[in-house]
Length: 148
Image (tube, rainbow, N blue to C red):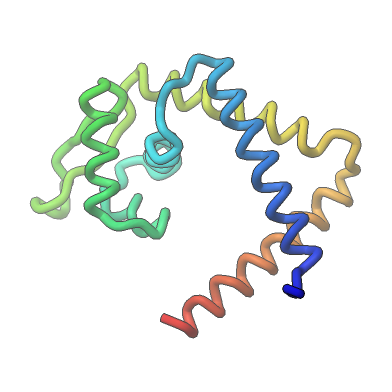
């Protein structure tokens, strides 16, 4: 018989329920971007004047993959590239007005999903959950660093 982790199983179910709520929310808000495009758009919104490398590092993704996602966002008129003032090899990324409006809609969808997920929980419960989840993330990231 395989051993299992009750915490791991619970986390797995939580992640799937949250992802399903997000997909449903994006669909209801008529947001047709892929999850990767949404993550990149959010990264650009949170890191003004950032570069593709900043986004790739933050997302722990290959820069080539991020560059392809950015190219699609640029083609859709959601992001523009600007010359980097300190590095002629890099370009800063900025949201266009439609890109910022979409980022706001995405944030609203995520806020609604977060509120649904936290429904009925006290502020202390949410703070403790966040503390525990951050500790688990640190544990996994630390052990991943040991393996690499």
